[in-house]
Length: 261
Image (cartoon, rainbow, N blue to C red; front, top):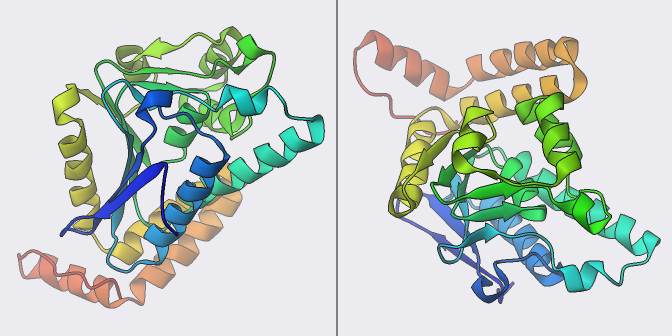
């Protein structure tokens, strides 16, 4: 698939950078952009050369400043529900990808932009970032997972404060409440995002994927199901070549050479 609204490249370390590239529209998400992101997420997951993903927006003003209001304004109720379900599925594919991802939040992350960032494994924000779910100010409800992921990240009370006021918060407040993992100067954002991915990618790929799966299971189905998945994941990891390599390397006091098998 050729892209008109996003950029996709993979560096020599296996880090895919996916950039929403509509700076004249503050990188707003329209139907075409969402379709291209869906293809890019599938591509990143299926490409063995890709080991991690950085997701960002073009320019220094916006990560993604929301959905395309021109599209939202003319939706029928049935069309709106279908659009929500499609967007939820696309972001869920990113969230469930067995490879770590970082949202490099380089400015405004509002509405669908914040929902997109919350579907990533972690979020690193530039100092000028503003994050929020302003949908109620338009008389609508977040449709790409905002009402579900935000409470899981920051707690019910703080999530409702943001969701019901519609007011954005700055990067420092987002860090304080746990919505982002770090705040850095704008020029350092992409390198800090890559640096965190390098840490995760230095570990056993199968163990990383199984760990993310276990966390997801517990958050969505409760602790009993989460513990069941954790035990299964622990057993699966014990069967891998990476387990044998990792334990040998520890005992031999050397750096492991994981193969993802």
